[in-house]
Amino acid sequence: MPHLSDLIRRYTALRTADVEWLHALLSDWQLLADLSFADLVLWVRLSDDDGWVAVAQMRPTTGPTAFQDDLVELVLHEEGHREPGSLRAQLADKRLLIDRAWSEGRIIREGDPNWSGGVPVREELIPVRRDGQPIAVLQRSTNLSSARTPSRLELTYLQSASDLAQMISEGEFPFDDQGPLMVRSPRVGDGLLRLDRDGRVEYASPNALSAYRRLGLTADLVGAELAPTSLELAAPGEARDESLSWVAGGRAAGEAEIGARGVVVQLRAIPLIVGGTRSGALIMVRDVTELRRRERELLTKDATIREIHHRVKNNLQTVAALLRLQSRRLDNAEGRLALNEAVRRVGAIALVHETLAHAPDEIVDFDDIADRVMEMAAEVSATERPVRPVRIGQFGSLPTMVATPLSMALTELVQNSVEHGLRNGPGRIEVEVRRTTRDAADGSDERLLVTVTDDGVGFPEGLDVENTQHLGLQIVRTLVVSELGGKFAVGRPGAEGSAVTIDVPVEGHPLPAPRA
Image (cartoon, rainbow, N blue to C red; front, side):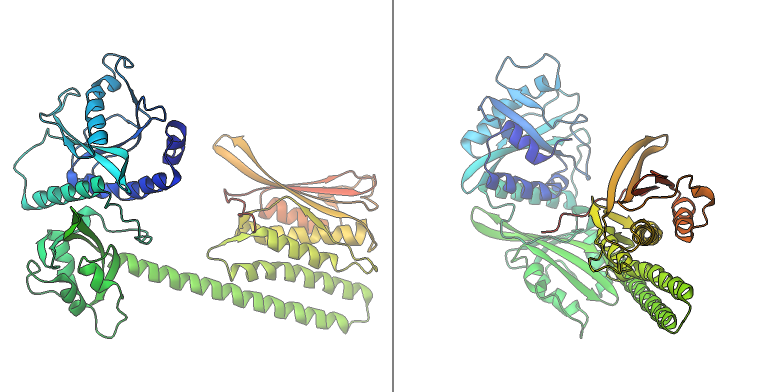
């Protein structure tokens, strides 16, 4: 489905500030749909003023929907531009109401229910205003098929919905100065309090009352001032949310939390400003105790994992230092070379753990690791002009189960090019990386193709990769084929220069964002 911004650019001539206002409205309109027990459709005027286009739709979670079909991208043109019996024809009568709400700048309510879709639907058209000018029209459609005598809770919902609709038509909602909301804000069904202009509770839904009972409230909530009541319930000695008094009093739009007796309750305030006068506020309440407990457990687990990676890295660096010290005490050149190779292999693994110690999860940006591994492997060059391997392309983000063996394989290949291809002399080494997606029987198969080339002496003619006695190539083949489930191939044997390609599957981890 096209994004709201794409639809607006395609069909309308709204300014960027107006589009941002509509985005803010849509981020909160589930609240209006649930309070209204109604579907919402956002209509925006076409750029040629020849009609309207529906750019967004929301269904209520508190009642039956009025529209089974998706209305997004439906266009209402002037009379004569509709097919008989179509959904466009059923909504054609709304064109006049939409035009009236737009031109008169007030909420237009349809007199009798509309039966054209087979169920009785009550329509209401709300002009969406910003800076005193209408920018869209919000259609509120209520399915009346299950109409009955409303309860006190439903009456409170409907009254609150009417206040919000009036605020939208006056340009008072959404709040343009409200900061970013929490990831999971309370919803209507989680718990609702309605306050009067003095901050006293006029109505408390059963879920909201239960949340305050769990905090330790024993008195009646209705009639109490919510701000001082909430502050008294907050656990003594614990850090209090500085915005709690303002949010619980309904004097400012925002969110806050109360913690007491091991319970955490989240509040969200929406001041009701109708006709330029603050008439009260809506406070949505949600018990987030279990959510916060899980977040603390995840943070603890994450910190533990990072500490483990940090200690593994330190231990590996200690092992590398001991091997390096031992190599310096050896008189045997072959033994010293073997120990130095072991130092580089251990160092490649340590680099991965060092990165994971600072990563938020078990996913790493492998480009930085690859560059450091390539530089470390090239340090064996003993010429006056040291070899500087060049990376072409991006590895992207890789899981640790791929990053660790891949870093070791890359170390071996670059070191092999320096020692045997260039024979510790000057030359060129390139590491080319490509990520590809192939069609597989069970879905997309994302793979990583890495080719290491040099302009050295090349591989000997008749090289048998399967049975080679070269330790470095044996290690690479084992890592790529056995550990990563990939493919390993040697190109151009017997010719000048060498090329080694590894082809390994990776999970769908994206390339990192370009660095600034």
